[in-house]
Structures are given as C-alpha cells and as structure tokens.
Image (cartoon, rainbow, N blue to C red):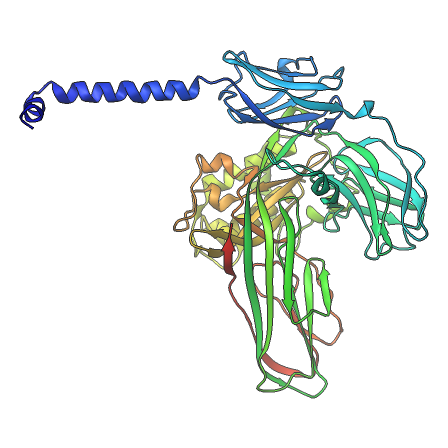
Length: 552
C-alpha cells in the first residue's frame, strides 16, 4: 500500500500510464485492422458476364487502393468496380469469365474462394412432360432481360384470363445469408400488379415485365391448377445493385372497431383494411384475420363486409401478422442510367400523373422543380437534386404550417407526410416516376409510429427508396441513429420500416349511391377506407394504432 501511494504521488506516473494505455489501444486497433480479407458470400452465385457481382465479407478495406477481385482467374478493370467498402464489393463480371472461384486480394493477403458459375455454360435439361391442366412453359422470348423489360412466356394451360395466376421470378438474395436448396426453390418474387407488370394473359401466352427486385434464376407460371416447370432467365443490370441486409422479424397486431350504428334493416358497411405488403424487403408474411374477410388481399387490402348492422353491437376486426423485414441498400452507377423513359408505359404514365393528393401540375411547384434540377437530364441526379433542395428549404416539424403540402412548402416546414408528397410532386413534375409509401416505423421497446417515405423509379433498375424526414435529421425518441442520415436515406432504408401501401391504392366503390370515407394520414394510402350503403345514417369507425407483439 505504501508503494502504491508513493507511485500515485509521483507526478510522472499519470502521463506515463496514459501513454501506455494509448499504445495498447493503438496496438489493438492495428491488430484488428491488419487482417487478411474474409469472403463470406457472393450474389448471384450463378450469373453471366456483364452482370454485377456483390461480394460480402470483412477486412476488404474502406477504399480499394491496390485491392482486387478475381473471378475464375479474370480480374475486372478499374472502371468495373461500382462499390468497395470494408464489408461489401460490387463489381461487373468480365465478358470472358468462366466458371471458377472468386477471391478478394488486398495487401494483407487473399481470401478463401467461393464458386461462381457462368450460367451460359450450364447444360439445359430437356424432355419435361405436360401434366393435364398444369401450366407448362415451352419457351421465353428472350434468355436475358433487364428490370422493366417485357418478356413473352409461351406454353400451355395458363388459363384464358389471369385470375389468381402469376409469373414468379427469382428474388435478389440476402447478403451473407446461406439458404438451403429447399428455401431457394420455394422463394419467389411475383410480377407486380402495382407496377403494371402484366401486359396480357392468354391460355398459351403471357406478356410480362421483369419485376423490380428480380435477379438471374428460374421463372415459373403459377395458377390455381399448380405451378409450371422452370425456365432460366438472366436478369442483367448495369445501372447498379440492390443489397438486402439486417433481417428483423416482427409480430404485429392492428384492429378496427365499428360502433354506434344507426341504419335501416338490410344495410351494409364495408371496411377496407390493409396489411403489410409483400415486397422484396418484406418476406415470409403469415397472418391470422378475425373474422375472415369477404375478399382477402385485393390490391393488398382485405374487404370486411358487415351486413344488416345492429344498433348497440360492436364489430371488431383484428389482424395479426408475422413477417421478416430487411434493410435495403442501393448502389447506383450514374453513368449507365438510361435517361429516357418509355413515356407510353403504364407505370410511367401512372406515377408521373398529377392527382388530388400529388399536385404535380401545380404551376408554382413545377417552377420550383425545374429550378431545382436545372439542366440535369439524368433521372437519378434529378431526384437527388430535388431531395437535397427540399432538405435545404424545409425544416422537419411534426405540426407544419398550413393545411396542404403547398402551404407547408410556403411555410418552410414539413412532417413525414408532407416531405414525401412534396418529393413526389416535384419529381413527377420533371418526368421522374415516384410514389409515396405509407406504413410504420418500429423501434425501441416495441414502439410503433405512423410514417411516410417515398421511392422513385429508374429504367432498367427499379424503385429507389427515399426517406426525407429521417434524412433531414428527424429524431423519434430512441429510434436508432445512422451516420450521415442525409446520405444514407437517399437510396437506402433500414429494417425498422414496415410497408403497408406503395402509392395510393384506388379502391372502386361497390355502389353508385354508397357513401365513402377516406381516412387522411392513416398508415394506408387509399382512395377510401370505408363504404356504407344508402340505408346507413351514421356509425363510428375507430382505426387503432399498431401494436408490436414481438421483435426478433
């Protein structure tokens, strides 16, 4: 004890101790950073030259420097690298690449190899037989296509009309996730009704666009009679990559109550209730709905039909969902973006149109949009210019000034709803397709908050997410922070977002003399949410907040 006291009284002891501690920290830091690269996965594992390969792992280095990737003995040129971070590399596959191992090499060594297979060198399996009534694919009009490009599927037993039929594609894999052979064979991405991917459907021919989120792999046709044989389609994408990360699982519950009904006998009330939307980022969705809806999953909505509602009766609708949600990152090569859209395409016409909720034709907003983008012709850079302009011009406020988004703009403040709708109005005004997205943020101790963000469409690539309020630095209690939110939330979205609707779902009235009710700023963007027949004089509908039952 005396020795210790003597040491502590010595004035030189503290600086020496601090110096030694700093040396230890530096040594540990150097040890952690001076490690050879580790490659854990590649996506896709089967592809073709000219496509983009995403490598996941660690210790790649924050910048490429002298680092390199080798694919079956071929080294991509410097201009082929689209991204290089310590944990992820995106690179275009050289044209003369064969089947072989992929390595990452840095000054500290070379990683272990992972097998890449050139799809063009896989032998085709022929001789499949047609089962009675079951759809069968004879051929496709092309062996390769980009996202949004039309392909024609020819075969038998597709059905005289689409009905519940769908064309299934292979979805982008999750970075670093190892899936079993069964999971790979049963995980499909259907062509999207929201994106108008289906152009025509007959018993022997289907014209369909390659959906957003598709990657190279098998394509099937599914009807109520079964699922067809598979045909391989190479999905090429020179614009950039989409990477799925950070899986989170949720169990959520939400409900609607109808009370205080005053109606004539035989009257009806219909409630259109949304659920979490199946998307590239939201998968493995299961649910329990009480009572059973009359229509299930009509444009992502469930129709609950109340017949002859009685005074004093409480009608409860409960929906419980289980789902997996992933974070989405996009890496864009701006030099490869197609600048001209197909203006006759239904997706383009729909998502550049001016509507009541998205006033893209408002003269003042059109003028602002054109000023923000200047002479820029690249649609990605147009969208980014508008994003940065709005962040610079507006301040996030949960109660912005004015009643309309035009008022919010004039008042220089916006909440999440106004931010997303202003972004869509301005991007549409300069010819970039966009749409608002509605749902919830889930964070902390199972907290949920209604939230809105947006996405815009790039030809040959698909939808790019944009969250302006979080990009503006909005904080919601213990919502997890990210570095440089302004950069992150243009093109990326975290797994705390749960999507209920993309765009405004147009619900058709069931009767010309019925009364409809649209719930403003609900977690679902719909033309209306409730419809009652002429005999219903009044009722009360309560849309309860989301309850988060579990997170894993």
